[in-house]
Amino acid sequence: MSQETAASTTRWFSLRRRLLALLLGGVTLGWAASLALSYHDAHHEIDEIFDANLVQVAQMLLALASEYDDDDDIARLPADVHKYQKKILFQLWTRDGYLLLRSRHAPTAPLTQEDGFSEAIGADQAPWRYYSQWDAEGDLRAVVGENHEVRQELAGHIASRLLVSALLGLPLLAAWIWFATRRALAPIDAIADQVGRREPQHLGPLTPPSAPTEIRPLLGALNGLLARVDQALESERRFTADAAHELRTPLAALGVQASVAARARDSAERDHALAQIAAGTKRASHLVDQLLTLARLDPNQGITKSPIRLDELAAEVCADQAGAALAKGIQLELEAGGDARVLGNADLLRILLRNLVDNAVRYSPAGGQVLIAVGTVAGKVRLAVSDNGPGIPPAQRDRAWERFHRLVGQEIEGSGLGLSIVARIAEQHGASLTLEDGLRGDEGGRGLRVAVLFDANS
Amino acid sequence: PVELSSREFALLLALAENAGRAMTRAQLEGAVYGWQDEPGSNAIEVHVHHLRRKLGVERIRTLRGIGYLIPKP
Image (cartoon, rainbow over all chains, first blue to last red; front, side):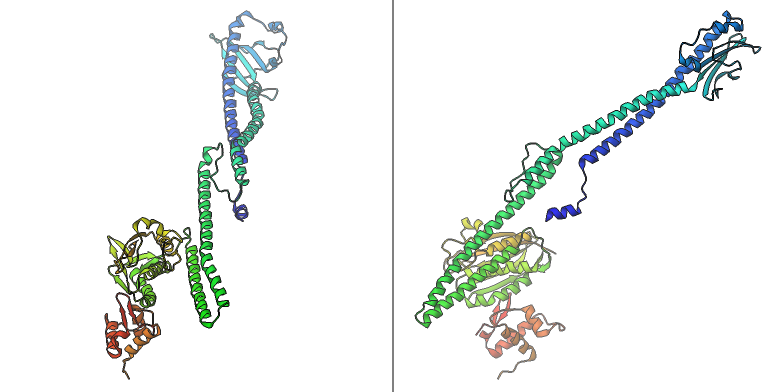
């Protein structure tokens, strides 16, 4: 059930896909940036080198110019040895506009009129970069031109080499990430497998042989939950077993009385058996009531609280129990003083009070005394219910809160659940409980006082 | 024949109807005065005192701190 609701509300995503997308995206961006940077850098460096080259060639031409003195010399230039020679041109001009020397593919018209570096579209419709310089005497002018495409080609070539290696690298990287995430997530799969193969009653902690620290909080929380579920199941099991055991005795007694009544020889005997059955039924239903009360006091369930006057609530509960007290000749008294306001649940506190007063009346001897005191002690509200019954020896007081715990040799009827119920309700109110000696009775009993200490709500 | 005032009668009725069970002072004030009248601080005590004088002291028991009760016959 919970799995289906989880499936319908949870937005699932694949950690591997997400990691893959994030990592690849990041890497691609990084590579693209470095590629752009490399291209820019290469372009710049190439420009520097090529420009330096142009200058060098121009200066060399000027230095060598004195060796030549007429146009015929052009014929003596060697033939092309490299295809790029068409992309590099030069001209050597005299001051009076005579073309002294030019490279094989250079036009006879001036490449450029400008001095220094300049750029223009050449006769072949391509962008060209020129450099021209006069010699020291101002007689000769060297013009060197170079097809700009050469530089772009070179920079582009360098960049494309980088791009190709990046494009080849990305799928490799993707495959690696895919493999690495699978490997990294393997322990989680192992844990899921371990949980999946568990029997429902196996609620021990999950102990994978290895697990990433990142899922440690998850494992811790899961193990905490398992422990709590285990505890809840265990207490449920114990409760059911105890309850069944406790109910068996009164039911067996009822059965015996019923067969006695069936075989009764006279009406007096039958009436007696029937009266026993009536009393036994009453006891059994009291036990069932108490069991249900206890079962409803789920410790994990929140309760609604409101400000309550504990003294008024005590008076009400005492008034309800007064009849039973009177029937035993017990003197029931309520002593109230101070500001007895607490924050609590009236229904639950009524159950707590009723159980305490009922216990006190039940265990006090005929003609005994039960005193309920509500007052303030050191900023807290104290409720104390005292009787002059047999009491509980100090050594046995700790066990008195346990369910179905009854003192050995106890003859008085009781479910053994009263103090458990009181303890549970006190716990839900953050109140502390103590058992002390109560009122000293005529029969030598030590008496019992149950004190409940609440936080004041004033 | 005993003569009772209306308040005494209301008080006796409340106690008798709940015979065997104690009534707190707050419950008795509600029964005798309803919700509109504001009773004096010891009004219930005074009425109980009068009732006891007319019916006999043992008829109405006092439970200290709790309230009053008429035992079941």
